[in-house]
Length: 223
Image (cartoon, rainbow, N blue to C red):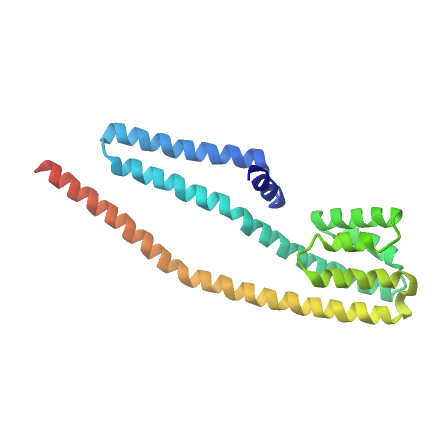
């Protein structure tokens, strides 16, 4: 489980060491504050709040990796669409598949630059379709594998072949899918924003309830 968590942290573009240090420092601080309040105020309520804060912080801290990975993958898909839009232009201007791919490296983000560099290096060693399929595995979209297969088929036939038309049809379909995902993501964010006031109200109610319970407890102890 620890290995999987470490892999997820790396996939999210974060440092496992820094994440562990932050996690331990924050949780240890909250627990120390809770113990101090318990000793000074002799009230389990405050310790319980601090302990609950540890649980809440841990939950938010550890679940944010999946969100970061999803966001990073979304950004890579957007950049992929932009880059292979350039690729289409290069092919129409007489570039070979290999030369066009090398040109894309100059415009790629760090992730895609690494993927493209690996693809070009593997093409030098392996003239089969395998490097293209391996490259497509970096993205969680089946249509990208179809797209890379159509690019591989362009190697021998080039601009004048029917494979270029096939590539463009698949690329246009991919662009449509990406746009639909963008719209769904936008709707999802708007839905999350609309629920924010409700969450804030719930939090306020909890705080008020805790405060009232504390006041009643003091009154009863005073009596």
